[in-house]
Image (cartoon, rainbow, N blue to C red):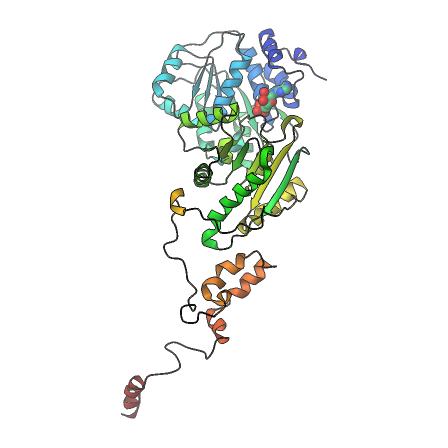
Length: 480
Ligand code: AMP
């Protein structure tokens, strides 16, 4: 087995690695470090949790140990898709470079330009940045990229998802042709392949096993959620989340709650807080300082529930999470593996609970195919949620202006509600008791006219009865 000592790393780096407590290099480290130290381009196909950050940081520090930074001309550049990831790389750099004199700057949104300009002016060895912020600095004329000897692109597939590929291409073109490139992506989408073919030169390709399987230490369950009414779905789903959390009791020490949309991240966090749960949101639209504060709180245990979007949570290294709740089934099946991989780390036991609404079922199929197992179903604690009594306004959510009343109930109070148009259309289609939702939905969506057949004489247009005063005028005309 390869040892760190066999990898030709600078002794100062080795010392830091030892102090970090790492005994053996991970496969991506063993594969990427030797070619990187030889100055070769590297294409690493690996995802977060594989130790990939050290696989580029350690050789970078070793290679940069000789030489000095010049004002406004960083010697190396690391691009990461989100502020958190960039900040995480910077933290890693601090750990591994602590015995060297190398300097770094972190260029991310939410931090004042002035502070960052000062650092760049002084000259830095390593510049860690998100693509947009880097280009902002460049366009303000505060930065020269012609001194970049090593360029790292981290999480390229996320860059693609976030629309950063044009920025990445531009940055590649601003750096010298002779630079060394270390490029990492969890997947090789055609667009990523095109970029690597264009900008990497005979790279050493290292692929480490993809996390298409979920850890056996994670106990997973899925709850099929069936709202009692469509206009209550959001409220009832949040009530179900609370019920799930409560049912886990003291086992649930802390949790990440994933939502598919940023707007739900906010609403769910606010709702949990309102109900006395210690929760805070994290997503890309929040102030950087607030995001950092929230993350720090979650890491040090002072915050129990982190409500997150996939992008914000991607790649974040948060140890010891007892639970993951998927408020929504993720639409990308791989995100399921990433999300639940937040719990059950390093052999610890973990728990992952997913809420699946009827509209999520198409995603569920893809996930179960990917992980090659059915996620065990479980009943919602206490049955399907009873309509919650939470006031909708308090959560910033518009209460339906007027509840749809059964149309015929007003005139025929004894009519069974289920047969009234308002109840028939959307709600029965989603009702828990419907054994085959598709068919029942189709049946219930028969044209309204057919439904009325059961209820009495067929009425067409104004009705079968034509008032005499109307018929009279026609009769007179016909006669004349
Ligand atoms: P990454 O994939 O870079 O996000 O790393 C995931 C986690 O693995 C981080 O907490 C690192 O500190 C840790 N790590 C990186 N390399 C090693 C190693 N060789 N041995 C043990 N842990 C490591």
